[in-house]
Image (cartoon, rainbow, N blue to C red; front, side, top):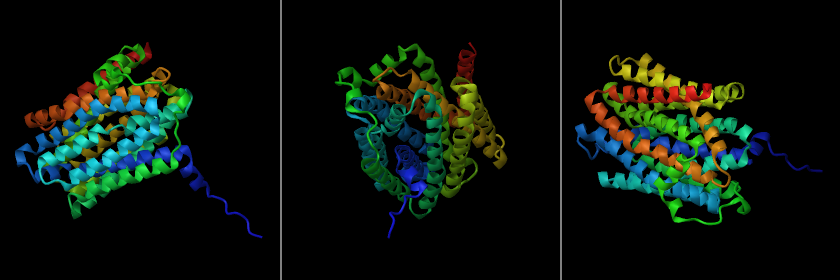
Length: 404
């Protein structure tokens, strides 16, 4: 007599709601980071050497501008129509944008690819709203920490794969990123149940919800969100400086190739896994979200200071210490502040608040790369020094508030 075969525990976990969300985050970050090691090299095919840093910054800033316009709209749409449709739209748009960028041929084609991706950039806010729907207030901090672990794995493997594919062709990582986005969309469509039932959805969309500035202003009227958004914006500026400039810095200062840059970026993913998955989840219940977030910002700022010193003393140990501290602080800060924002969101407006949060981070991503490129032209360490000051001021403000 035959007995039905039992599903292995791992399969059960991966096909659960949480497993699908984590897999989606992993594929999202892996696809996004695939292109980072080759970005300056892709731009170098069409731009003169002195203009490479500017064009890299401009391409990143244009993406941020489009994301600023689109993220609140997509967030409000997820409150009205559910999280899954918005996530599907965003992933398919990313696939098209990556493919256009990979086709290339001219700088304007690269810009077009980033515009397409930016206008559909709602996957992260939809996923965060999905988690906020699924978990209680007490569970959200560790849940966002697990998202960080999945993102860290993607951030670890994506740059390595992107760097290795970049040795074959500068377009190969872009096509790989498009493929991961499509795979993510299939996974969401087939395996991810809707978390926002019709009875809890907003009943209509109005013009104000399509106004990114209006949504952001509306969120800032809430005193609980005001400080959190300001602190996140400062943190985002520091992160954007690293994301937009590090590959250029390593290429020009240390003469790293695409694969070496990929392995450096992979170390960021390793530290994300350690800090968010192992450390933050243990510290949050003991010290609370605000104190853990403050400590994370301080450590993050110390990492930026070391990266600024790297331009004066270009040695590998200084690079490693800077990356480790920056990413460890990032891993403590992000799940803590994400849980605080989710808890502060008014009922029925979780997607709108998450969209506004992504929009205000897009402002930092809009001006951060341009400021970074200008500062880099003045002195190679200046972007990291200025970012460190901004992050440290935000850490101090949050710490004072947590101690009050």
